Each structure stands twice: as structure tokens, then as C-alpha cells.
Image (cartoon, rainbow, N blue to C red; front, top):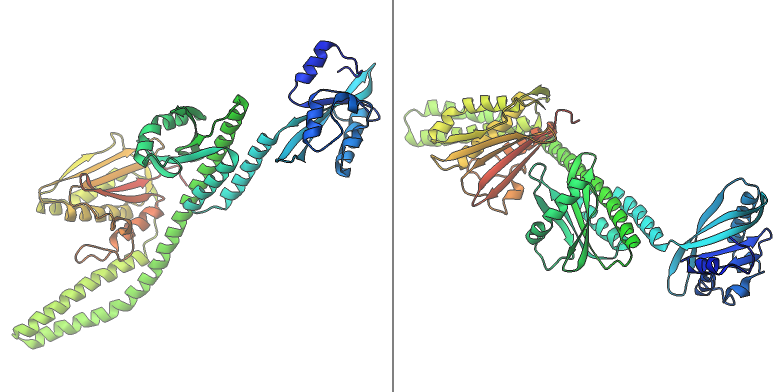
Length: 505
């Protein structure tokens, strides 16, 4: 850069065209040149009296510095460059204008003449947008690191997105592991569309984002939408779409995309952590219930044995009295029912230790179906089964997993109409896990009942204990898997079992 006040016309026009301030000083800090942006910067940021380049030439750069820390920073930078200890020095500093707080980046380099340092060049760039983005990402990381509930995760994401990128709404959709069907799990804005309409319109964009692994831009009636994939270390979760306000420059648009991509990655981790916390809480709750159940069962077993013995003795001594015989029979039937409940309580409260070994879950199904053939024939039920062609290898406890199979099969038999068909289908998922679905065509479970089917002691079946499905859930948890239920009038009721890949921990 030329240090004299008379510069070639092209150099002068070039410096004045720069969108940031640039000026040079001599070794004592006297300003030797400045571009036209200097005067606008000084006037806009509270330095009256500096209206043009001619007004500052020969002035000390320290005269425009209002605070001691900034003066010390400039002196230190000049010393480091003069002694050739660094090639350049840069730092950020805030600057409050009458309208808003902004952040600038200062960069200082040395000028040389005949191999000696003869001055310094200062340049100042407005980095407020990128600073805000960086601050938003830091805040997002901190906020999501503290969120352990899924609702809180969505709440924090919404708050941080509003701060980071000007927008009118966003949608988070999670994908099914193997069908890639998306389900909107949270949204803000987009009130003119139902979740189903959003899923139909945005599915292609979500698939594009997941296929490329990058942010995707799209437009809807002239407005801008930015979509980022939700991917964690465990795999694909879904996507997040932001309905952005108009963004003027390509640079600002790229910055918004980078911010959304980072927030999406943080969101994916937070969602998985919330799922894990929920599973741990569920496991602890079941363990606590199990301890109480085992204690209650232990206290009931002996009195029930005594009642049964006394009732049988009474029947013998009553002789041919039909009234006594009838009432004794009722007592014994109730004792038998309670004994079954006590046995179930003990199974739930003091389960056998799970011994996981590599085995084929399909072979376990073979054994259960063979053992329950008589029950199926009694109701004239048929099984339509589809299974993987090759043997499956999962870590499982055959005896306990068989208990789960038997329980859901008995429930399906009880719910299915006589002479109907049960559908048993299983497959190996892309991640190596195994999934099985058992569907019956009976009456659908009421929507208000469905969320409670795995709760302890909850049952709508006459004579049911409400323990069977809770026990199934506990066994699947101990396998690192899941059990879920769906029920629709037109499709029937489906129990889904999922076992993780053998490499899962």
C-alpha cells in the first residue's frame, strides 16, 4: 500500500471501493493514508470530527481510541510486528452504534521498505452476522446439553433458531428406520398446513438432504426453505426444515445454512440422549415396581395356600350339601386366579437373569408356534408368516424371548375373530437389527387405552392381570430392544418387536 497522500487514481478508487475500513500508520502511529470507508466508520461509531481522510492524515491512531485496553492492544500488535515475531495480528472488538451493538474484526500487518519495517496497515471488517451465528451455536450447544426431555429439546431448538436465523417457522420430522417414512414430531409456524400435508410436501426434500448428507435449499411460493439432515453417530434420525425470511446476499445465505447444519447435528444428539434418558427412567420405574410386586406376591402366597387348603377340607366335610359345594367351588376358583397373579408378580419382580447368546430369533418363533398349535386350531386361526431367507443372528435369551412371543401370541389369539388370519412378518434391518410384527384383525384398541397397555396392572381383558405386557416390555428392555403397539380399525392391532444388531452394546 502506498503510504503517501498522493496515490494513483486506480489505487485510490480500489481502496475506496473496499467494503471495510483500511488505513496505514508510520512507526509512531501517525495515520498516513485511509480509504473513504474510514470516515463513514468513524462517524457511524461515535467519533465526531473525523469526517474525511484529510481530517485524519498526520493524526495519531491512538487519538481515536477511547479506552486503555484497546490502546494497549494496538501497541502490542505494533511491537510484535516490528520485532517480526508474528506475520499479522488480529482481534475482535465490540462497537456500539446508536441503533445496535456490532462486532468488528481488526487485522494489522507490517509494511516494509528496504527490508525494514516502516509502518503498519490496519483493516477493520464488520463481522456482526457471523459473530451472532457463532454465539447462537455456542448457546445452542449449552442449552441442548442440559435438555434431557424431548419437549425441552424442541423448545430449546426453537428458541435458538429464532436467534440464529431470521425465520417464520420450522419443522422437525423423524424417519422410520427402514421405510424412510417421515413423521412430523414438532413444528412452529406452518399453521396453514396439517402435519400430514407437510409430510407429503416436504418428504422429497427430506430424502434429498439425507441422501446427500448436506443442507438443501428449496422454495415454496417464492419463499425460501432450508433443510438439514438430522444424523447422529447411531444413524439417520430425520431432518429439520427452516422457513427463512428473505436473505439478500449469497454469503448470508451460506452462513444461515452452516448455522442450521450445526444446530441440526446438535439436535440429533440431544434427541438421542432424550430417548436414552427416557428408556433409563422407564427401566428404573419397572425395577421399582418389580421390587414391590415381589414383596406383595411373597406375602400373599402363604395365606392363599391356607385358604385353598381350608376350602378343600370344608368341601370334604360338607358332604352332599349343594350350597356349600357351590360356594367352596367359587372360593377355589378365586384362589386359583389369585395364585396365577401371584406367579406373574413373582416373574415380574424377580426375573431370571438374562443370558444373551448369539441365536436366531426365528427359531424361537418356530418352537412357540409349534407349542401353541392346539390353541390356534381351537379358534381355527391360521398363521401367514414371512421371514428372512437367511438365518438371523441376534443376541438373545431364548427362554425369556420365548416368554415374550408366547404372551403376544396369546393376546393376538384372544383378540382375533374365529377363523381369521394372524400375520407374522419379520426382517433384518439395514443396520443389522431384527424386527418382527404380529398383526391380528380383531377390534382396534381404543385410542384412549393404547398409551396405557404396557402399564403395570392395566388390563381391559376379563380376568387379565395387567402384568403380561409390562413383563414383555421389561424383557425387551433387558435385550436392548423395544416393544411397541399400533392399532387402527382398518388395519387391526400390530405388536412390533425390535432387537438391536449383535454389535450393539
